[in-house]
Length: 181
Image (tube, helix red, strand yellow):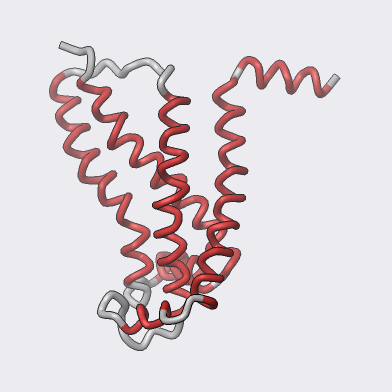
């Protein structure tokens, strides 16, 4: 009886069940990316010389961990984000277009371009400036860069947020202007 109830709930809310499936997809993909990033740092000769580049701050205790996190982000932006950007677009295509006035559209376009553009670059900023972050932000950065499981969990969250921010930049904001006079 419980199974029939859950099936009815899923049938009545197909988008909700799709979003739940994406959580598991992101966690699995994040685990694979973390393993690939760790293997890249450990097995590819010469990759650790990136740490000595001016990109990273000098004298950081976790240069290798930050390099692993940077490689994770690069791999995620190249492989996971485009795939799920397409999937999000397909899933959200059926949603109704927002009806906003001209001033709302202008504000949302300007604010969205600035805020969402910064959000897309934010994970790289965190990884490259680890020594500067303090307080709770420092704890977040330390758990993301210094722990394999933190990289998997926080990485899945970051990749999801970046994918959604890119969707809003590339498809959501333009939908404000399409079909309205």
